Length: 293
Image 1 (tube, rainbow, N blue to C red):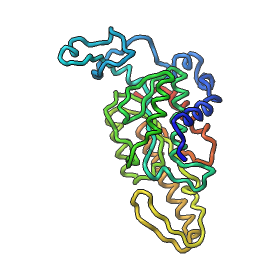
Image 2 (image 1 turned 180 degrees about the vertical axis):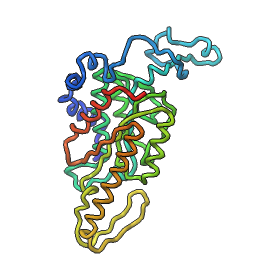
Image 3 (image 1 turned 45 degrees about the vertical axis):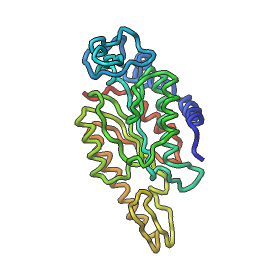
Image 4 (image 1 turned 90 degrees about the vertical axis):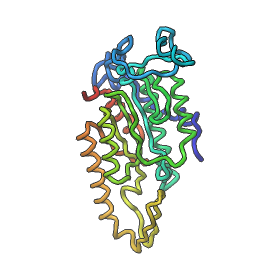
């Protein structure tokens, strides 16, 4: 049964509870945590214009651009590059392959990815950061209300979504967190990171796998079916393929890691049979580091 948005939110709050901003202070300084994960927040607007957007409830009258609004029947406000660049854009793979679970005890990869995303969101919001879901068309914001909105986005889901995110126009130096199984061909993964790199965007990748996908713990005659139309493979003695499979998986992961680092990204591996706190903490500490210029 798929967890509801409220249940995911509650689980995310529970997961985030042992990871207060003070843990980041141990790695950096208390003032960094008080000012936000990046340690570069300040009061006021940015200096570089990024885009116009429609006026929304909660925006101050002072932010309205009356000249732009006069050309339309709607009110518009100005967004600045600095303001948006300090936001964190979150994404999780919602493709069919993420529904895989070798045993109900571990839960699906998708459920784990959504839990990690929400837990990280809780921590970032507690630190005063603005967050948004990549591709949701929701503007980055802070406060508990944004967590409810994100939970709704995750609960609604998206039919037939791609296994990799579609890079979109983000402010230069924006921070992005991508959570998925990253079992796509290496060429496609590299092309995605290259597209983000061309936009000046840096971020963090978390590969979420079921333990069976790393160890191939099967024996005898096994029929493997690709969940995303990859085809069917019938192996007479699956145990004979274990070592070759493990080497191929390790090589795939190593190549992703090398390319991610060369693009200025971090790459973390996580399995659904392991505690989620480790992955969340790695992401949170990674986001505490200044963005690469």
